[in-house]
Amino acid sequence: MVVKLNRAAVSHARSLIEAGDVVHDEHDGWGKAAPSAADENAFIDKHGYGEYAKWFLGVDSEKSEETKGRYSFPYGDFTKVRRGGVIAAEDRAAQNDHDDIAKAAKRLLNLIDGE
Image 1 (cartoon, rainbow, N blue to C red):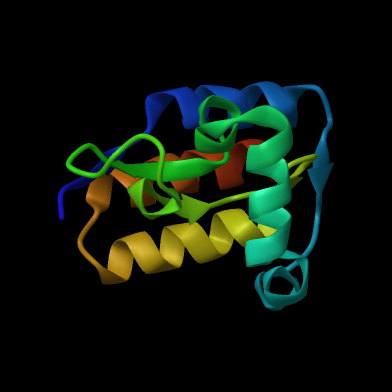
Image 2 (cartoon, rainbow, N blue to C red):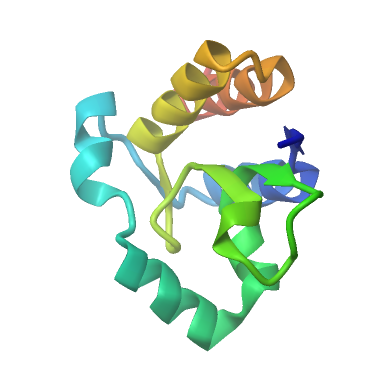
């Protein structure tokens, strides 16, 4: 598995944050707000994998573009960036040595927090 930074997702997240489409929740709020498998499937059915991919900071180019397994490190609920989701993505990326993803998530968190 070769997970790399999804630059299109970072750009999408920045645009949403700059537009104010952010929920300022905490890390522990992400568990309740994270999209379920059914939510993901409904989003893909309606919008396709191209739009789905924009909600994940990690992408595994060795996996098919038409699979959910290709995408990792979600940061939002398909409508808004969730601060708790960004924190969770940063934490998991750092724990799994995905430094570029962790750094991108940290920059997004700083943007959310106005730093």
